[in-house]
Amino acid sequence: MAALNGALPALPRAVAYAELAESECKKGAVDTAKQYYSEMVALQPNISWARGNLIPRILFDCSDLAWAEQVSKETLAQLDYPVAREDYGWVQFARAAKLQAAGQQQEALQVWQRALAFADNYQKFYIRAAEFSNHDLFADIYRQLPHFGEVTATGRAHRGKTMLHLAINAQRPTNVRWLIDQGMAIDTRDDMGHTPLHYAAQTGQIKVMQWLTERGADVNDVSGPSGLSPLMQAIEFKQSDAALWLMNNGADINYRMQAGVTPLGHAVSTGSLSIAAALLKRGADPSVRLYDQYTLQQAAVELNNDAMLALLKQYPGTE
Image 1: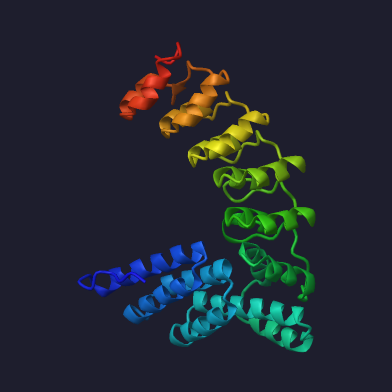
Image 2 (image 1 turned 60 degrees about the vertical axis):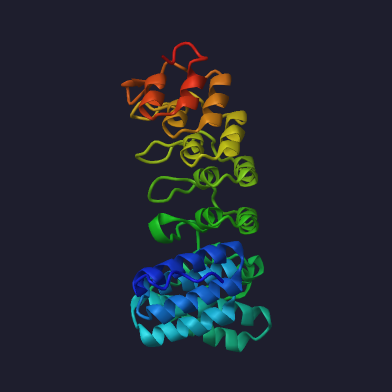
């Protein structure tokens, strides 16, 4: 494990260890992530925001339930604040699912009831479990735990995300497929107006986009005030393969947002050279103006993008 510069003050080092722990966890390096977490706590035991972020992240990404239970209990004992309480409830919730799956129903029910005491909304547990990397644990939660009511398409997590939004954004394709097969609505919107297809486009998950469109998702669905289509979302996050897939499956290449921006204009403004080239080859309108002001070549000059400018000069109308 790499050591950080000891000359740095304790707080910046602790923050850096927190970031390293989350990064390692996303890679599946559970032991390294836990070591970085320990370094962070040793430097700054009261760094509540980082502890609150890392405990659920390591539970979701690494599925190390025993570790998560230990550190969430320690955190709750030291820092009795809302996020710490919710983290502890989260771990108890996951533990109850494992007990139920193992046939220990009575103990599972007791643990489950204890988990509910640490949450203001039990649906939050169900919804965010879609982010678990361990699909079996995720499925156990829905198949075996007492629901005390159904979690429906109206159930929402942070910023209006449904289970399907969360599973796609966390890139959990097995959970995504399971939710789709259970009949989860594929056209729900979060608070920004984004559908699950928008999330699949921005994360470049072509297989998920295929599943969603097979169930009726609209490749030209426009989200909320921003007016972003899934193609625009793929361009925004420079997901070239996802953008190409959408173009090949009916995406409107000349769609205009309220500000007058088209997919081609968006590709130029974000510096997405390969996407811009693909749009031009498919006949995207070269005469569009960014924000009804700049020609595409003018925009490339303003952005100091010589490669983009060279591409645009091959197409009359972009000058």
